[in-house]
Length: 403
Image 1 (tube, one colour):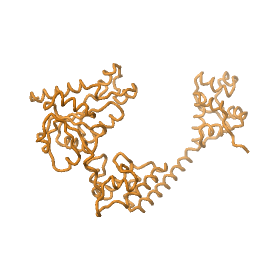
Image 2 (cartoon, rainbow, N blue to C red):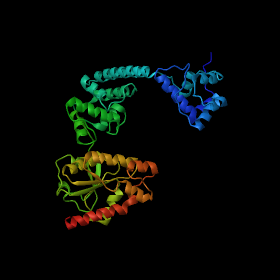
Image 3 (tube, helix red, strand yellow):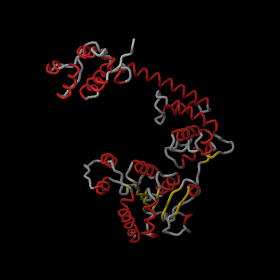
Image 4 (cartoon, rainbow, N blue to C red):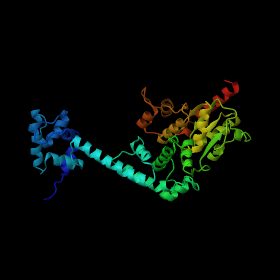
């Protein structure tokens, strides 16, 4: 016997708003354990939606003001060789299930994946309580989806290669050997973050929540060294003790290696600005030179060097003002900087700046993320460069005046 199929006309009908509401009422009824043999559906239809449903149930039903009944639906669908259940399942591409049954199935799948992932991780050498703690934690993939087993298999390729007390490895080397990708264990990857947190849990170290000192410490405890020279940050007039002999007013690149030893601010600045794009630093150097207040540029998503420097600034209680391009990446950059400098305030990274530039009206209470999503345009730092230079000039004047 041939499997039933859904005619194109019925599929198009089911995609309109009135029939869609009827289908949703059927799904709710089944999920609560109700049958589809008889009874009325709980659905409120507008006059337009009722007309749409009547294309299947007929004009007589439309003018009767009667509810949508399962018997009427069954009779209409029978002409197409379908039951109500078959119709909805063909349209959805999946079986209708009772909510209790679905939850039981999900629970069984989650428990099976938990046991499977635990076996994989323990076989790789991870302590059972560490593996179980990760699987039960908020950062683990949702059990039952297959994602936990998948990443557990990837972890099992990395964990036995950790040198611990043996000859050290560089992180990129370990990643290349274990994953075939030298960047496969970077902080930007789920695998890198998960392995680092499992190492930290195994050694009693703080679990790294962002790239930085805790991230490097976790890897170092397993004998793995993070790259310190490709991670860099652009600065202008940031007063560090080891840069005192460098010419003020000249942009300076610092690497993570520069910041690994003991260092301090000399003197501690009262205020420091953070931007995303090197153009801002270059323009500030041209316009203000040695007078420019301390300025840090992340050059895109902040590297470990930028986050370490900014974390040190935060510890000194310097006032930090941060901004980036107003776009999805910019929101991520500002969030990363604020994770390192918890007291950082925003520097023209606000709804007022965005609305004024584009000449749009934004309702009160709408935040920047919502405004940008609604208007759909990015605002790059270079576009507001004159405003930013004025802010830096004003800060320099106040610094000169001692205010």
